[in-house]
Image 1: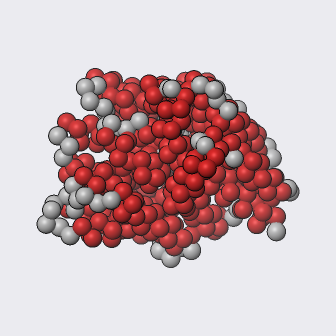
Image 2 (image 1 turned 90 degrees about the vertical axis):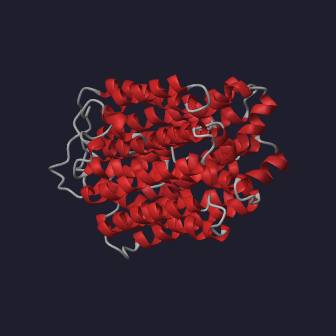
Length: 486
């Protein structure tokens, strides 16, 4: 019963983090209008993104050194407190401060949950747990928009922020009960210098990602280039050495996660806009396309949890299905292609990402020695977050510079998906051969060209706004994918 309570608490916390990231993307236009802070709209997302990157890096090392309990409960408190500040905010500036605290706390929670899985559950149960984590992220994208709409209309936008802390307390109590007697106290790693420098590089990485987001909008190409240069210097310091050249083992696991997330999310934020503008589909009908992808994502994660396919098959088949789905969705831009093709196209794409995501989470723990789970999990999440932000920014800029040609975006995301297919076989390597996080080789970040929550904003129907602005200010929520689907 204790482990059941623990599992329920873990999934409940992950679901709440996912729901709130998605809900904020939907409610933020109303928030900005009421508080009179439209000029600060993007900062509400990029501030939370910056905090989440720093929180992910700090949380990983903290959990390795002291055990997952301290970062977990600090994160829960920060997440709930940030929501409270945002929900009671009298101005946009105060709301942004609350979002910063919320993003930091949510990141601590997400990394600590990975370490808890490594410390509590036997290795054979990891696929099922990460399958549940993936579902905990996908389900809010399906039911969340309706819930947020009802709450906003009936109780106002503040209810979207203020109701979740109470649910967070309930989930925390359930988790506390489940942790009783579990082997999670104390760290598994000796203290080592370098943490302050790593946190500083995390902050620089967040700044670079934010520059790319804003630079992807019209007339700001220098900012986009500047952001890419900053990431080329900073990001390798947060990832396993060799990640951006796909070295075998953990570096390729992290790289594949970034490529898969970047390809999927950048394509997904375009899908509703393309279906509305090019094929004159209603917003509801376009949203159903994304819902189909979310359902197949959840189903594929369920299959992964029951190990229907082997890990190698999951990665290869998943990468191939993402590429195939993007090709077929790109074909929908051609008027002679039946519009109905869009629905199975995104079901295939969702199934592919559903196979890949939890498999990479499992591999990350398998390739991590005791005392490395937190740092390696944080590298996985930071890589995914930044790759997604860069992907959305670059494809948004290409879309606008090409005169709103959708095929350009699908072609660019197809390149990333094919690159992921090539990297997938390299994700398997011995633990001893796994290099520690480090600076990597100069210039590797620029080669990536590439926060799980741009996808949430897209699934919520906010993708059209996001992409119309290039990378989209709502696309800044991609920074939260550092706490994204497992």
